[in-house]
Length: 103
Image 1 (cartoon, rainbow, N blue to C red):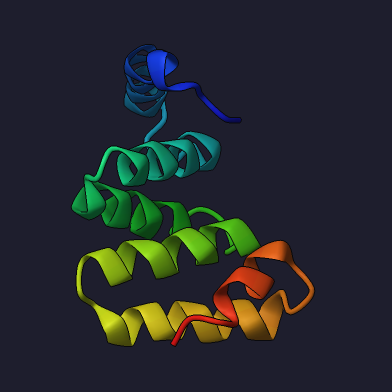
Image 2 (cartoon, rainbow, N blue to C red):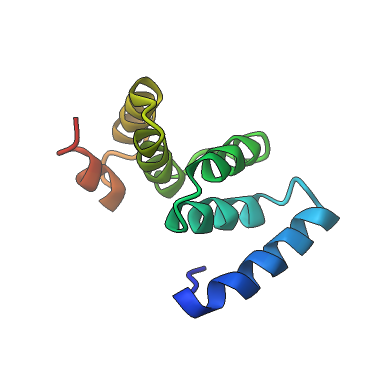
């Protein structure tokens, strides 16, 4: 899913409602991670990612967002872990191509 800027407030409300009903709903956690990152709420994005990982496996997109989120928080060690996982597990993905130039 992708939400336009003007849709974000409604999307956040709906995602929070979904998570209130099922706090383990990985799709909602992933979308909240993306929106939180886009809004600059990096700690919330990090928290959503950790909750997501308790329910689902990484994807190229979650790893890429993890790299970006941890870099924004200044957690370079964890950003590099996500980067290495991305390059190892999803080497042909568009996200791996984007991250391969970042050190």
